[in-house]
Image 1: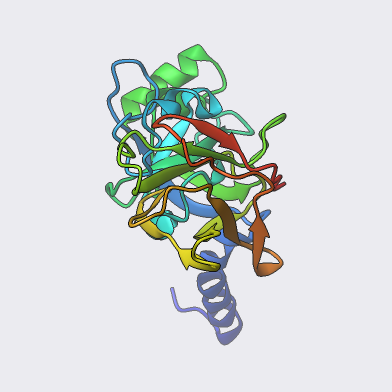
Image 2: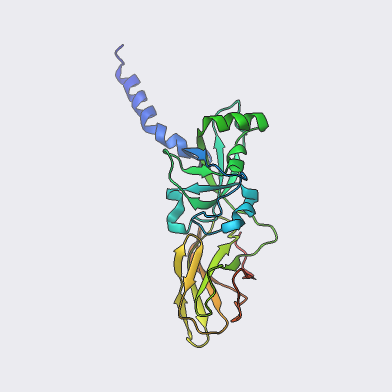
Length: 251
């Protein structure tokens, strides 16, 4: 069948608009999601963000590994609404997952924990059916992280056993913000020194003097890049596993 010019023009318009449809509905982006094996259905304690056992606590274990959303580690802790597109099985809202790992799948943007993936279903039976699929088409968007009662938290990494070496893990970054850089201040140096992003949400610094440490964080958000300074210090007698409240709220 030969199309007239009007029909040809209309077909071209539809084809040109099709990719845009995947990002125009409430800023959702089309992709695919799968899940990984886990004996407890929660996160991977060896995830690339460095959250360790915190993965089983953050968002009740509803977490995910991502690829290009990883952002060289600054995407760690970001929250996403993910919903699948099989009407008879998929919940209207979908799942809220937190990025805790890096992972590349078969054209997937999300490799989810079993509990996170199961949350895509509208009920237990639907979730069981989705698990059989293995991979499903989804749409997703970034949403604000809400940690009621929590400020931005700094946890001394377990590898910080040398008093002149400090590694810290950043937890409970609220809103839709990314921590892109951290600097530290010690009175002896009288200057802000950049910390290295060791991996994921873990930053470190060596050759430190034995004194209190003040931190400031470079934050990326809708208002652009800016610095916020911790109202508390990390004392010179810090120990691995110690947790310090920055008194900073991002929401």
